[in-house]
Length: 216
Image (cartoon, rainbow, N blue to C red):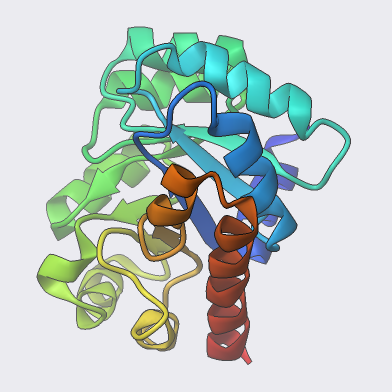
């Protein structure tokens, strides 16, 4: 998938992006396939992992021809953005606002999702050309912070990440989130350690059901 709007549509349709942090290179393809089998079509591999570019490329190849979109998270500078985009990342997330990262994404036609917490950061990110905003860490401020940002800034697209779980995901969507990001609440690390890909798939599917219930 290369069309930027199509990637945005996929992120919104999926409703949840799986944050695959700290997964080894030997396991990453199996885990990605299990999460995708559980119904999650948006997968984020974090750029602070060793050999992140190689892992993005491997997952991209494994899920080629499916409805999956593969992105990179924790992209902190322009050089990292260029590396993950070259490896096949179709969207780029960060915990902060870095205009250089957003510019690299815009030049490459890749979706840019910087991290924000305050209205100033949100306004700065949108002015720089962000496509969506990652409210991070969401657990620090809670669902009501979405309205606090959208009130003065308008209907900006917000993806809360950090502390979103099956127990509270409905509150974030009710508050105005367009999608959410989830790590350990979606990615079953205990199952990964055991080599239990069925367990990985089942936990991902449980989160997908929670998202579907929250949006209905």
